[in-house]
Picture 1 (tube, rainbow, N blue to C red):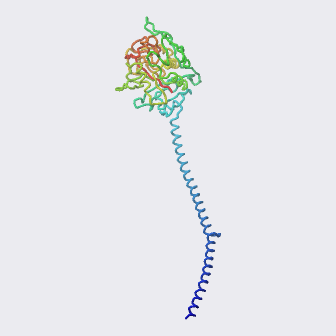
Picture 2: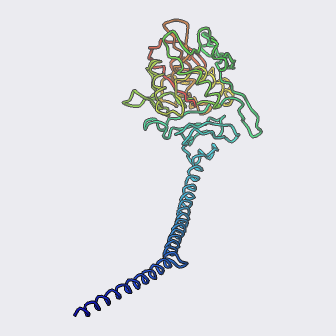
Picture 3: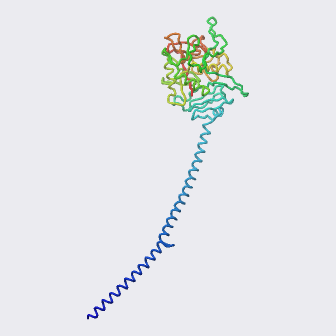
Length: 411
């Protein structure tokens, strides 16, 4: 029995060592195989690395392809947008007066366009050229409010008064219009009851000389500031500077007209009841507030520079060289744009009613008396003594049926 037990122990001990050795050898082999599979030429790590690189390359290639597609889409959209913009730009930037009249271009920015003689005209944003506008500045370029102001102001019309050397024929011949204050050869003869003289204009004050106080007809001055209580130009130097830089300004085509039920604004349209019985301060206030929310241009009550230069413009190009001495045309008040005598309408270069219908407030100061510091201009139905060029003084609170007003625009 003892011998059998010992034999069994020996056998067990021998088998265990052999098994251990075999196990170790197997493990070594397996480790070798594992190491070989992991780090060998075709090892797992290498395959994993290659797989990662392949994935990364595929991802980068995919990104490149997606970028190509994205760029293609963007370029397609950009080209189509550019075509739309080009079409819009082509529509809004019409630089020819005749073409602008024909297609009714509404300008989306202050834009310089050119008449048939290549004279520049600066059109404000929100305006178009009226269908009955002249095709060159000598005939009167008329702009019409399309969306520059509110609904009430739509259709208001203004005429361009050009400055500088103005071409008036195909040969390129020029005549010069200087911004300034003028006197005119027009004198009322009490015996005959007629305005006499040639109507010829004489420059009394160039705009560049605005700082000097120049008196016309003894009492009348255009001041930056007045001590008499009357309303002066909103900003005289700005008017002069901007007007000269733009090469012109706009004058209301008609006298201001009333809008039924609304005393806070007015119209510049034909056939309206004249906005009269208004004081000079109120006329100035209405003129300045007409486009107060529009920063593309300024509006104001007409000043003596604007009035006189418009008359010179008319006498130079209308063929009516003595328009400054004309007056009345009729014996009663009529609607805007309809003053006439035997169908001879008071219209020159597309500007109406400066010789008749009602006199008009201006920002010019009269120093004849502290009590009458305001100045009116133009002829009117009530009296043949007053003509287009005449100046008369009134109390600033005066509001007569025979006194109205008209605005100017400058940009």
